[in-house]
Image (tube, rainbow, N blue to C red; front, side, top):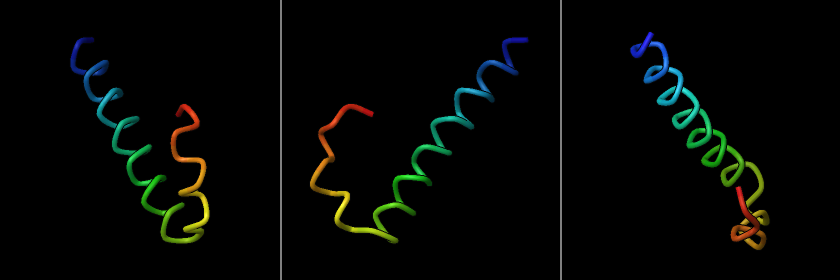
Length: 38
């Protein structure tokens, strides 16, 4: 069970990281609202 929790946490973190990179690559204008929470 612990392995599943850790794997899920890593998967979500990496997913968010990749999403941020893709968003910045596709639409650099998003940088303006960078400090708007998540």
